[in-house]
Image (tube, rainbow, N blue to C red; front, side, top):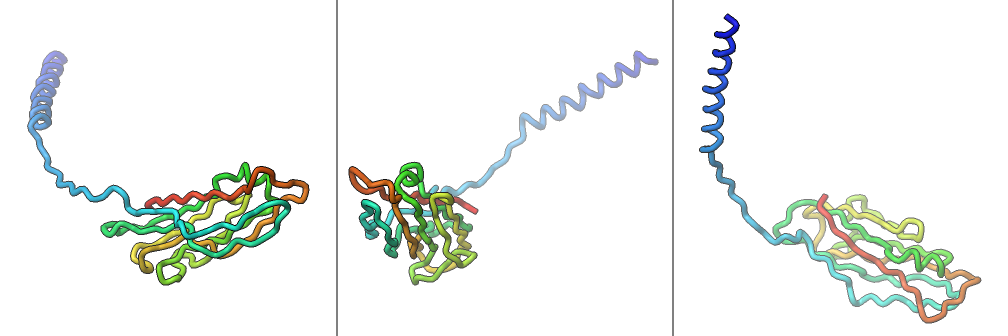
Amino acid sequence: MKKFLIIAIVAALVATGGVFAYTFTTATATIGVTAIQSDFANVTANTTYTAPDVFGTYTGTWDEGSLFDIVPHEDYTGDLVIHAYLVNTGELIRQYHHLNMTLEFQDSTGSAVDERGMEQVLTLQNADVAFYWDSGNGTSPYYVKLTGGGYRLHKWKTLTGGSVAPQLWCEITQR
């Protein structure tokens, strides 16, 4: 009896395994894919902004102006996260007693289009800010704008060999 049971199980496995193998080797599927431009937004540094000269034991404020220009791709319908980073804090912290930059994400009309609707501050201790943009909010092109802030160099440190200027980086990711 045990022998017949084993033979029956083996026969069932052979029969059903053959059906699955046959289905696997002959099944096909067609997937339609449409390629569009791979970038969902274009970001460029705005060349019209000129930073003030910083020297000696100087204290001052930042002039207002656009730092980055952002144009979402016309076919992209999703939301974006715009990060602005202060990337040379190691150099800056040796020269500046304090440094803060107030940034805002605006559209071409000058309206804030960050979903929180507020300015954010970059500092030597907080070198990253993020803006959240909902697709369709505002009018393109968009800008990361410097709207204020100030700085003071260390009293004990005199700059030699020129100015140490902040370097900013802008990164855009899908949300």
